Amino acid sequence: MDRTKTNSIAHCFNPACPPCQPLTDSHCQRCGASLQLRGYRAIAQLGQNQFSRTLLAIDSTLSECVIQQSWGEPTQAKLSQALQALHHAQIPALIECFEQDGVFYQVQDYVRGESLAKAIADRTFTQAEVWQILESLLPVLHHLHTHDLIHGDIKPENLIQRDRSIVLVDFKSACLSGDRSGKPSGNPEYAAPEQIKGKAVFASDLYSLGVACIHLLTGISPFQLVDGEWHCYWRDADPANRLAQILDRLIAPLSNRFASAAEAIAAIERLRGKKIALPPVESPAIGRNTATFSGHDGLFASVTAVAIASDNLHIASGSEDKTVRLWSVETGETIAVLKGHSQLCRRSLFTRTSPNY
Image 1 (cartoon, rainbow, N blue to C red):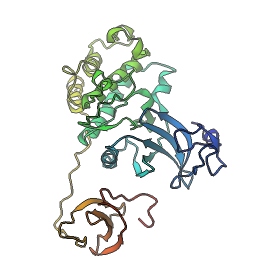
Image 2 (cartoon, rainbow, N blue to C red; image 1 turned 45 degrees about the vertical axis):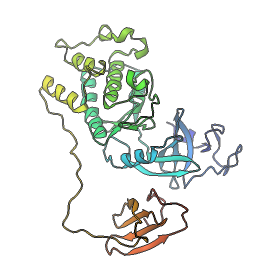
Image 3 (tube, rainbow, N blue to C red; image 1 turned 90 degrees about the vertical axis):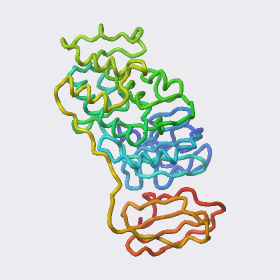
């Protein structure tokens, strides 16, 4: 994306407003809202669906980031917590998340690089390149799924080449495993049949990855393939048919599809005689020293929300006593008490704009 072009316009954070306005304006010409939100200014729209919108933005230092707006999503807070725990080099880091005026916001790093969609516009991919894509992305999906997350929108546009690796971007269609919303998600061209029916599972991501790889191999849009038949379009066929075996299992009906990324990885390892590294499983750190922080008022005032600052020196806790307390990890003492809430505090959160934290 040409930054010199996008930086000349601004987008209102109100989805109902016109797509672009002069960047020099401080407020929206249509609704009057500020064009700056917590230090961010939107400079381009990257995508939108019925329940969310994705914007390219700049912060107060002019660094680029991606902001996803979501509405009508009751599970968004839990989803954001799961995204914050990912910590993977091939997944954009979640900078912060917050809620304002009934809209939930997620701010992620902006990943520069060429998407595979742009690459396929110029050429088809070799089988060696597709093997590399599978061996790069299946461990990412394994990591994602072990955190109970389904990406929900794997397609060439969301696969970015960066530093000889592939980064999986755009989590606007992501959901937690077991989400019973019943809403269809993703791009119908790449989405699994069960996902289109609103019943996405982990294997739905595998289906989308398989369809994307077939598109890269053949150059044929998935909508143009008759009954899923793709082998006749593949000119660089593997005599041993190994890649076709993997791709056919990835796009098979759910009952015959690989059940997990780990199962697909194991099959590739057997066929190719090589080991594919998986990210280590994260376990909570166990230490000798523990502490009890006491201070919330009321005999039955349970703690209902906890957040740890990025400096690991401060903790915020919300409680049924309708307060949020800020604690020092080193001393266990209360630093501040935020009062005035009308109800119990269900969520506490540190953001990048929190002063000193």
